[in-house]
Length: 609
Ligand SMILES: Nc1ncnc2c1ncn2[C@@H]1O[C@H](COP(=O)(O)OP(=O)(O)OP(=O)(O)O)[C@@H](O)[C@H]1O
Image (cartoon, rainbow, N blue to C red):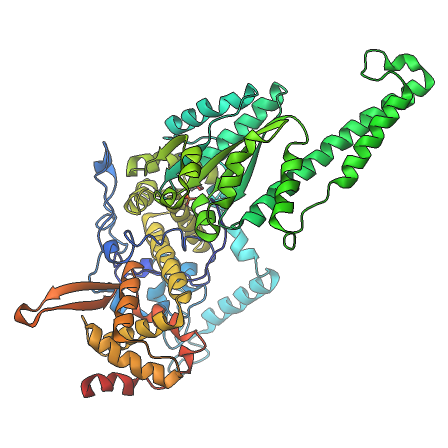
């Protein structure tokens, strides 16, 4: 499944960077990634992310650089890193990246410009420099200003050699023509679907695998091949793709399918009518033109034209709401059965459909073949939730899972191959230093072998390099990209939390900001109560707050560990797993939490209770 929404924040939460290292900073204004949600696997984020990516997977992995220790300039691991990040990261728009690695160091808090290494330096700070002192410099400035006047806003940005040859190739929407390390799965799909080309009904297929393991890309690749081969051999075979994350109710699925078939039928009828009208005019001049056709006379042709026109009239598009479901179903049924064909319906993220609206759609679709007269349908379901079939009616489950194909996660070496293939087309020759691809692969292997993450990293690293007008994409850019993508994810998760969870999280932040670490639930609850009163929110029970803390733990936002206190029993120690300042900023952007004016008294209250 591919999506392209791109949240707009940056930097780290995983502690793999050193806050003092400018290379690890990133650009808040960047809009290049789309990892939220996708990478929110609670197992792989948050607490686990402090460790270095596993490079030991598979043969040859020792050649990959250690994401923690490789390189001399970039972000080395710093246990305390996220707490004391350089303030420059906050609220900066387009700052660091424009300077490239090392750029921050040149910033002067007083606002003076320091062009940095190799640049012209000015220091008017004390006001003590005379005109003559700076004569030469001012002339240069004036010359520069003239240049600037003659160049437009975009000239500078365009002047650098572009790093990318074709950036689109790294975007999720791109369907690659080659899918390394998916040969087995692709062959298995093809072996099942080839019966469609023989006019038979292929078995239904369920495809499983974690996010970013190439399920959608492989299924789409096979579909394209299937459709092109069907055209080559003139066998009516079609594949319809539905993304059930978006189209998540029976009504919408059936309506979307119905409308696709109505559109196709309309095209078929149009072509047929054109042929018949040509035949009719030829036969009007000379009845001999009907020889060898199914028509005995011009009147027969007229009848057929009238039939097709009335079919066309009757084909009514299904509105996206408003019809009873059985009418939508019968419209879909008639549309798909309008002429002979084998149809493969690809339901991506099929678990979302079941989660949202049960298994009625699958039940209806899986029973259709017994009623269809002209056509046959086969279902290909794709899911990253291995357990979703537990919720299915046993009949649906057995029908849907006639064939199952599992997509295992990629290891670091496989991800390297994938990135190499894509980068050959995406970047200019020699635009990457040799450690870039291994490092992207290593980071993504740590994220349960997610190719999407690996590609996002590579693209974002390239964009950061481009923005800093660097000639090459380097390891530091990959680390910056990793921080940025990770922070994007955190920001998105925090932003979409329910208000009560936000208040609980804010309580933990307040405690940490006041030097209270490894807090327990009671301490969080005391601050939480005060905050609720301040903003007029309902106060939940301590038990419920404990549940919300567990949910935050699952999301990787906090780390809650149960520790034994000997004869005093066991208690939960809670600490923040995300960058504190950025998280606070996201929480305060919520209109309700933004109303909290002075938080200090709430923290004091901790000691009163
Ligand atoms: N073997 C591969 N070769 C080249 N690119 C790949 C390969 N596997 C995955 N990709 C790329 O990785 C990205 C994610 O792949 P895809 O969307 O197929 O994953 P998915 O398993 O369907 O994930 P999800 O379950 O999250 O939808 C896509 O950009 C895809 O092109």
